[in-house]
Amino acid sequence: MKLSKAVHIETIRINKQAQHKHFEIRLPENADFIEGIELGYRFDGTSYNVELLYQLNWIYWFIYYNNGVELPWLHFNEFTQYRTLSIGRLSLQAMDQSNFCYSASIPLEDINYAKADVSSYQFDYMYPITHKEKSTINSLITDGDTTHIKGIFRDEMGLLLNADIEYDVFIYLWYKRKTN
Amino acid sequence: MEKQLIYKRFDIDITEENKRFSETFELDKNVTAVVGLLLTSDKEDIMYFRGSQKITINSEEIVPEGYESRLLMTGLNVPPNKRFYETCPIDPGNGKVSIEYQDNPDGRTWFETHRVSLYLACEIEVS
Image 1 (tube, chains in turn blue, red):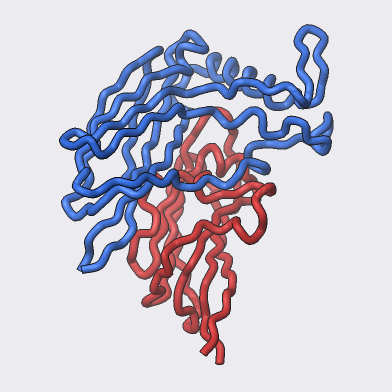
Image 2: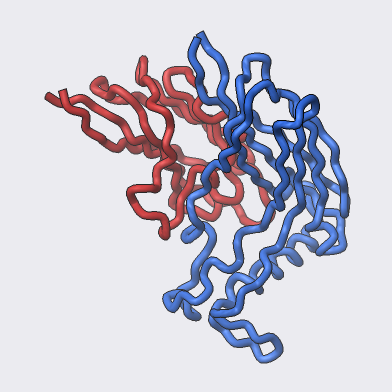
């Protein structure tokens, strides 16, 4: 018997403003213990209200790409830090045991990554796709037997834009599984 | 026998929106283990916001269907020696590497034909 690495993907669909979604994650029988977690999201580009999308794009653009540009009505500059927008909040808890408890806020890309970097001044833009740091698994230490997890996700992006936004939230649970 | 690290690149062209593209590649015979992987593209923003994929090596699932591409990408501010996503040494077996890439409309990006590149860090034995 040996242990090999595997990942379970749980997709949660959000389509209403301020929606709270309860869900359960059941890992396969041969799962031994959870060793890490990753989170992600994707907006729905097919059934999405395009006007809302422009609104989101505008907020996104406004905060990201004004690095180093002083706007007369808002004092944006390269040293000011801004709060990263949040998609929503996630909480996970083991159903049967008290050995797994996790809570996180899923952010839109970090909006402060290019702050105070002179190379990003005005014309040399930085983007999350070029300067985001490598995503790594958030390591968790559990003592085994947790294969049934209960979770809740609360929408915050819909609250921010005051609209029903459709998107998927992805939870990647890395675990060790027993194989022959 | 001494171990040496080599890097392999496999390309897949994504030509249509909201579709799945599969490709199987073959590793060199002298590869003894795959120790890292990395994804990149010639249009990184499209892959970052829209891409997901499944990767298997020797029929062993390394990342499952629906695993977002952004989790296997790195930015320029990551040191070159740390850019690869480290895997436990994977036995290449028959040497077959397959990737199933899925383009998912996201709304924040508009589709363009692009290239997705899978880089593998492989160990070979040299005498």
